[in-house]
Image (tube, rainbow, N blue to C red; front, side, top):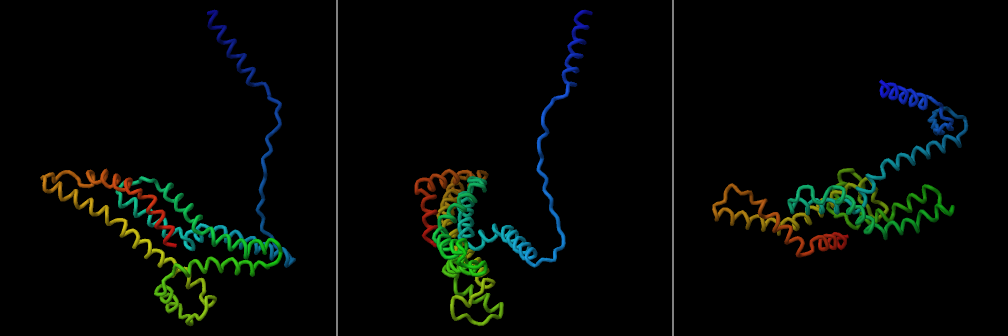
Length: 250
């Protein structure tokens, strides 16, 4: 009984301690208000429209990075490499996308340095207006895309849009240049992917022929050819050759 009473007293003391109020300052929680209201001043309206435009550009930034840079060709070729090796999810998607992003930064660095020198720094110094800075920033990107675009693809979108034949670089609109650049990049990436698939296809055919000649019909050829394909890729330093070919292709 004594132990029972002792246990009850301990429980009562614990409840009493928990019931004691703690004198602590409340944690300040920030409050964010989003209000939409009318205004009679044109200046406030202009600032609001500029803010809306900035948010729109930021939301489209991933698409701009993907479609107007070297990212498309790089990620497709890297995906072809993984499929040719038949290693399923090795390397993982995060690794391939990260490598493609860093290679994109490396390849596009001269273009972005030119944008910084011709558009961003003069705009920050007050030498250019916002519209002029945008046009100056687009010129290096347009030159990069035009350099990688095939004339056939460019002519296709010019004819589809019923645009007059351009005579100078400035006559080519972005609406025509960007899709022409994208399909040109897709074609180049698939050509590189075909060349990457060839040696691994030969290994698969040799292994399948050997297994059939030995009467091992039930043994999957992919299971046997996978180590040989990985060994070949490692011996020839495949990642070095692929990255070097990708960078030099630009």
